[in-house]
Amino acid sequence: MNLLPDLAARRRKSGITSVCSAHPLVLRAALRMAAESGSPALIEATCNQVNQEGGYTGLRPADFAAQVHDLARAEGCPPGLVILGGDHLGPNPWRDLPAEAAMAQAETCVAEYVAAGFRKIHLDASMGCREETAALDDATTAQRALRLARAAEEVAHGAGGPAPVYVIGTEVPPPGGADHLLQGVPATAPEAARKTYAVHAQAFAEAGLAQAFNRVIAMVVQPGVEFGNRNVVTYDPPAAAGLVQVLGDLPGLVFEAHSTDYQPQAALGALVRDGFAILKVGPQLTFALREALYALDLIAGDLVPGYGARPLMARMETAMLAEPGHWRGHYGGDEADARLLRHYSLSDRIRYLWPSTMAQHAVADLRAALDGRVIPLPLIWQHLPGADAFAASPASVDEIVIWRVGRVLRAYHAACLGGAGEETHGA
Image (cartoon, rainbow, N blue to C red):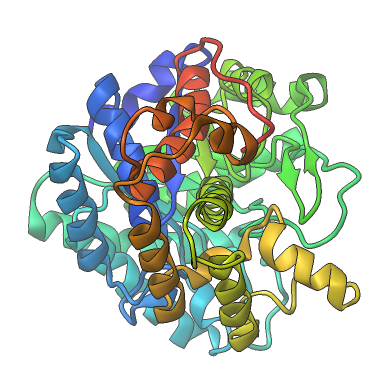
């Protein structure tokens, strides 16, 4: 676990990619890259994805941890390269409850994460609960973060092993991206970042948890990057210059940048050089997964007699219409526009449907149609540019998807090493 505390010592020179996804093929891509490169795989789950009630994945923290470690063994990734993180850990899934009840649930959630071996813990208690304002002030947020840290410390002390490291910060972008067309996103004001740090430091010190606060390795701030359903706001270093200067007063910390999905390679590199050493990516990875599956759906339709015209896409449409709660409140416009966004929005809310029975059957049918077949090069050029190597041998749907997700991860990996990587269209 010394890989994460050392980030501050390497600040502006290198960073780490935080993979925020529960999809097994995305996780395999991240773990395979770690095995091949020798660099750590930081895998994070949110309290909405994974919690003591199962979250939307149906997994509790111990289940998620076991899944990651099983996949790591399958990919030949040494256990020492796997870092598990809990993202946005706080009362968010229980915001409809009174604050005290929601915080009790959040404490249980954090305790389960730490007991399951998660050691990077983002303390995020910035959201209001029943009859509270949507966003809380720094003092209230810090007191609730303190409660979560105390729960984590108690479990870690009893379990032994490395002590948790923490991430604080209240200026968190909307999970999964914004819902509207974005014109620009201001960076966190320097004075706001300084206040957040100071208020948290004081709260922990007064509660006798200064030792735990010494293990705060990062602060979440808004560097001025975001993506909506249709567009991306790219990092502008001069606009974040004042915020970056704050790190000079915080020698043990780096910044954690959320919603870096779809940033160009140059922007990712600039973020790392400016001290945003933890780059979180999630929807872009499942966007790439969906992109590969839809391309293979087209290839199967052209190549395999009787496969049909885009049956996987059609079944995903049916699945999304059957469970509108995942997207209806986020995709506006008329029905034609909503249908387009259901499949192609950059926020990629279709990712919630891949675990469904209908989606699993559709992907299984795609595998049955293509696995073992040789895909002609012209079809690769038509539907899956860049995948030429897969035209020379019997196809594997899973391997092609892992390759496509890996293209995104390679760009992040290169940026975190301070080098130039493969430039893509944002996916």
